[in-house]
Length: 634
Image 1 (tube, helix red, strand yellow):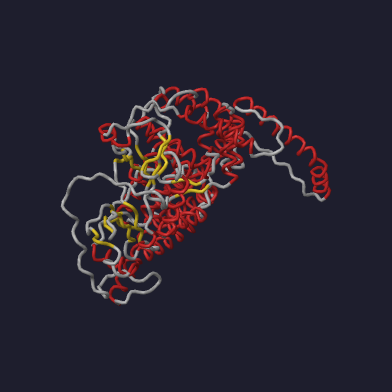
Image 2 (tube, rainbow, N blue to C red; image 1 turned 120 degrees about the vertical axis):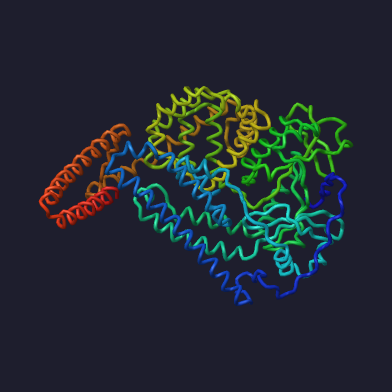
């Protein structure tokens, strides 16, 4: 992108930007400390310590009370009144818990906002009531006074006047970790300057320490320990946070993305001014234009919403399958549509050059004006491993071929299925979904009759409740991105057909895959190529297994001779459910007998005047019941 001229955004005539305010004194109180160093002002240091201590206590208290509520309902009360009563209000309780956390996150900001956004993607671990409630959680943080922003700029860049002609003291955006101001360079370029909030590093360290304490508590609870590796999730969350706090990393991501689309697609990435950037300050070209979800503005500009949707999806298909590097935060605030000037609208459609950058009109019907699709904010990106790409390739082929068994096998290769997953049931469910939605566009899928959806859900309710999926973190980012894109494309064009967009890409991908494998005698494309490729894989796997068979037989016989051979019989999910219901019934009868006996004895003591003994009997019975319930839950 070094040879690309910056976009000249048409803006209405306004009063000139205010000049840079006078330089703040070097020893200004409350100025953010140097990273990793203590504040020079002792009073400020004590204030920051109190803030961090308060955040730690508040976080631990919130989650501790949440665990107490969950254990009371799901363990203690479940044993007293039965599972049916507890399950009736479970969905509303989960929503209430999520709303309480949402309030806490908005109040505390910082890491809690990011945590809410992070867990909203973990549909493999958390109930949908929680993930849906937190899905729209956005930053709602107070604006940092400009004097502190100036202090950070001075600390990082030295003389502000040497870098900028002016900086607008009013921010255009404020987020959990940073604040954005418009500015102008001495060469006349309009830019935006992203500045990290004061003391945010200390706040992140404090919040993460509190969350680690909470994670250790959570792992003491058996159902959580069996369902998710909370410390591992927290480690991944921490890694994402520290990457977002490093603006040099974001600059590198933007440069990588720009190089990917330097020659085609009508994609634009703002120029990065590295000489005006550090780990805590990022200066970018100002490319503000029409938000991708401002449909009225797009229509006024004469831009085809259908073409915008097609270009967006095709751009992401290339990111995922060609470059294995993708922008993982495609919400409307990070995507703009820039209508090109009238001087560039005439002429033949197809490939051309605009502003020194090669331009591709896209796959639309050509009825709309030409435009750039602009990406900003590269703090959250994803990289796909070769294993994940191979699994996605097989997933795509299976979807195109409506191959339910192949799709389930691709899930295994992606690491999505848990070891205990019932593959036969998942395959049957996948086949049922194919029959319902194949060939439908996004609008038709969203308006399927409710009874058709519920029929499938009821038929496979045991599969849904068992949650046989576990999501690798790389796949979480990709799933979240695809989900956002799906909604965005549907909003742009209600008749958008995902199958039509994917099928040509799959054909090209298969041809490229075949050409990358030297020595393959068969060169077929389309459906025949898919069947041939599947047949070759089957033959290869057969001979590989046959070759390994003698060694496997020796291993089995050796283990049998040593007495180490075990046989595991796994009952079906239906049988396991029946056994569980019988066990629960026996447990409830046993507990009922205990309570009946002790209740009668306590009543007799009370009526006989032995009220002290009756009180001790009631207390002892309650404690005994609590111990039995907790032990049974573990």
